[in-house]
Every structure is written in structure tokens, then in C-alpha cells.
Amino acid sequence: MATSQVASTNVSADPSLWLERHGDYLYRYALFRLRDPSAAEDAVQETLLAAFQAYEGFAGRGSERTWLTGILKHKIIDHFRRASRQTPASQLGDETLEHPELFRSASDEWTGHWWDTKAPVDWQADPARLCEQTEFWEVFRECLSPLPERVASAFLLREVDGLESAEICEVFQITTNNLWVMLHRARSHLRRCLEMNWFRPDLAKRSGR
Amino acid sequence: MGTALYDKAIHAARYFLLRRLPTCKQMAPVMSESLERPLTLRERLTLKLHLWVCVWCVWYLENLRTMRSALRARAAQEEEAAADEVESAVKLSEEARERIRRALAR
Image 1 (cartoon, chains in turn green, cyan):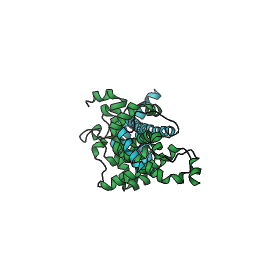
Image 2 (image 1 turned 120 degrees about the horizontal axis):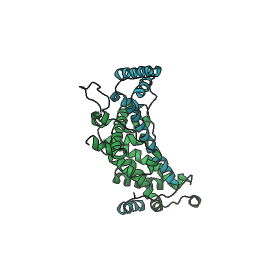
Image 3 (image 1 turned 90 degrees about the horizontal axis):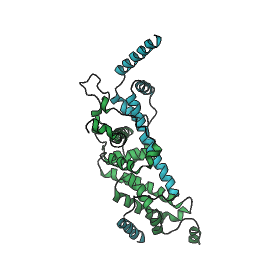
Image 4 (image 1 turned 30 degrees about the horizontal axis):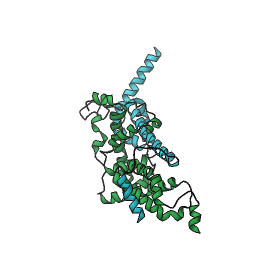
């Protein structure tokens, strides 16, 4: 009886059908966050398996895909938690990510201020439009790649998924101060990299990069 | 005449501030943290004054906000795509699909 009731909802109990319908979507979602194809494939597999086991409890509330995405979110966080247990702590990245070369050196009269030729510029960007451009996300992914795993992951959890600091600190077992240093480095590096490779590639030539 | 004097005074004030305030390099982490927590009164004041005299830092902060908005917009778009089918070039490979299918059948 119970099975026929469940089957009457808008969700099918066939995980291979979920794979057909939502596999690519879930994979794309996971890949953007995990940045590693095989980790993303594993996350999709774990999600579908967990979904199959939790199926009875779902009872057709909301859409199938939203339900699966909810499970995937947890699997992604689990992945980060496992990964951070395996790698030694204090993987904060280093100061080169802050691009100290953009600031005037200690011998300069204006120490610590931007060099005129390397200072930030107005991007005149529309985030909504950016978001639609596939090429932008390719450049973005390239720019993320020099960041240590943990720094990039923390940045994405914060900016994409809007997780609170406390949750992120718990996942990576770091202090709030560590998180702020990591976010500052991630932002400094990405900002510079996107400026040179997406918003103002003309500047890259000028400052000889 | 009056405006010229005013301009001169403003220029002097800006120069004075630029000399006395924390540098751009010191402001960069504060700008990042302004996206994370409420700044202290002192930090808020320093940042406001710094941004008044330094357009480069205005753009720096603006750039950080643009990155955040673009990423949040992407997340919102993913939510929408949860409702309807969106074709994308990023797909599971056939091998991965087959592997997952086998794992599910177990």
C-alpha cells in the first residue's frame, strides 16, 4: 500500500531514471563547487544512492530535482570535510595571492599605495549579464586554480552558497580569523586575475604581464 | 575666487588624509572583511575617509561586490534551472554515467 501511495506523487522511485533526468544538472552543480570531475561524479553517485535510501521519507514534497539538489549540497560539504581532515591544517595560501607587487614598495614615498599602472579599475560590469556568459566562467575557473583547495572551497561556499562564517569554519576546522585571511586572499587574487584576463585584457599588455 | 580657495582646501585635506590614513595595502583586508562582519566604528570611519580620497580603493571594493553578485546570480540561476530544463555543454561522461548506473543497480 505504502509504495503505491509514494508512486502516486510526482517522484519516481527509480534512481536510474533520476540519473537520466537530473544527472547532468547535478554533475554541473557539483563540478562548479568541487572543481574536480571525478569528485563531482562521486558526489552525484552518492547523492543518488542516498536519495534512493531516503526515498520513503521524501513523500513528494517539492520537485524531484530540488530534493536531489538538497542532498547533493550535503554531499559536497561532506567532501570538503573529509578533504580537510586529510590535508594538514593551516593551508591558508600565501601572501603572493594578495599581489603585493601592485603596491608601492617600502622605499617609495607612497609605500603601500597602489602603483598608478596596476591600480584597480572600474569594471563597468553587470553581474546579471556576466552570469550568462560561459566564457566568463571559464576564465573564472582558471583564476581559481592557483588557490589552495581549501581557500577556493571556502570562498565558493561563502560567495555562491552564502554559508555563514561559523558553518564554514566548522567544515574546515579553522578559526574565523583564518577564514577572513583566506577570503581576503581568494578575493585579492581573483579580482586581479579577472581584471587582467576578462575585464581589461588591454591592461595586461601595458603592465607587461 | 571663493571656489578656487575651496578647491585648494579640499585638495589639501585630501592630501593630508592620504598621508595620514592607513595605506591601500592595509585597507584591502578591511574591505574584504566589510563583506563578512560589521566593521568597528574606527574601521568604518577610516574606510569612509580612505574611500573619499582614493578612487582606486572605491573600485577595489566595487570589484569585490561585483564578484559576489555574479556568484550569487549564478546560484540563483541554478535554482531556476532546478525548475526547468536548461541545455548545457557540461555533462556527465558516458563512462561516469555507466559507472553510476551500475552502482545504483547493486
